Image (tube, rainbow, N blue to C red; front, side, top):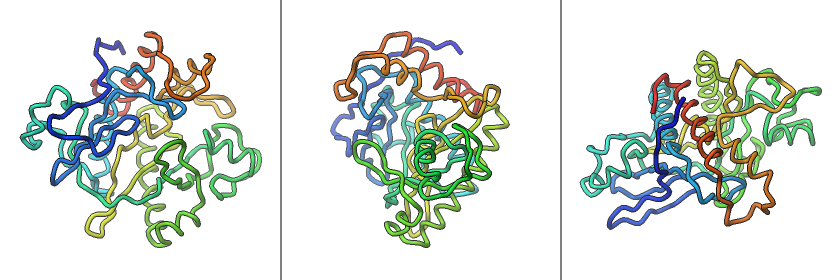
Length: 299
């Protein structure tokens, strides 16, 4: 898919409002009754936000989250309210140039302080854990699994939320100590149910969903799906056509960026190095391709 020219948006500026948080990608504002989530084109690698943005990245993250929120609306309530800037509070509408296509109003939730990770394949940090212990987050797995190999059934592997640096994989038992046994069991079952439904859709579109993470909150005692959902930033997607266990698999995320950075004499601390135009373009193409495959629509 060709990439049209676009100047990446690295930071939003809303007159009279300071963001309550600027994450690696999102700027979040208090919009009164709701929160305003804005997905910028920032990209991070090795926990460092890089100086270059990736054109269309924020639009892809927003479009895919909206697609999946709609896909899952009969499975779990979501925090999504609207992405139509004309329906935003009046003080935000003047910033349509920054917000259109990359923002959404969402409900304010009491967020659960763990990330809910589902894995259908043994890859990434799960593969590293398995090589060391034969288990992932305390879930014992059969001997002889290969890198990126399919698991007999998906597993729930929670993680702590880190303000900075990497999240830490933890066991179900430790997660239950943090949020309570009953809530942890409900989130495990819901996570695996969503993962199963999303995996089936992805496979039908020619993609393997290897693993993903969800964040949930509560509103009036009800579990609500929040944050971003099943995007290339929160999920590992592979092309089904080229899937092969035992080999590294190219994924629909920032792999081009990470691979390039590994060739540099960089100590992986801030500030990060500038990215070449070719790496930026290839990465943008991957994000756009993932959105097109999953939704059958261009950005």
